[in-house]
Image (cartoon, rainbow, N blue to C red; front, side):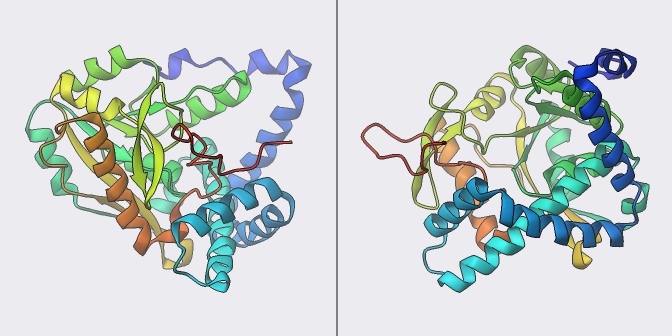
Length: 312
């Protein structure tokens, strides 16, 4: 479990020239974090346009995903969705700077939480709660805003770059109780058995060693099964959570949903299918919110051809 005392001091990086460029970048990010929200929104429009022009590989990945998941849309509708999604992705980058380098005070008044009773009901069971996050473009800021209302731990994937790891962890610990690395299953189970709440996300591709194949928009997708393991060992309730921007990006709606019934079920495959179906149904109504630039279908079942081109 990581707390603020576990994070390297900034003085460590100032003494090492290889990190000076990164420090300059985070200095610029600090300036962006201090901008008024209206200025950040305008900056996101510019950054989103630049991402579409320059991040061609990610653009092609997103286009492939949208073609696969929304075949009933016209080409013009998918192109419009792509542009909006990249603008939302750019805004997520700016919001991440705000999360890591500010207290988010300017955003609290426009944050609306619904479904809080579902979290409270799950906590009343006494076996801990897994709040099931998804990789929506609002995930970072939603988690940090939520940390000002509820006491919870967040699982995360450590970054190999020590400076990014320091800034990410120190930034998140401004808002959250503690951080748990994704490989620290013992600390996660220990927290759940103490009736604590853990933020966890399962909707990225980590191959077949940690997951099973389950349909997502009718396509077999490698899906992590750790949610099933944690719930089975601890008895924790699994409460899905979604978030979206409102008021033209100036506010947020953070929504808890009813705990998954009879979870875990008959098999990890069935549980993965249920989780993917929940996300799929949400995205059918809110398609612009997802991180479509991720290679969600990179790992294929035996005998199936690859979906994305090889990286040059």
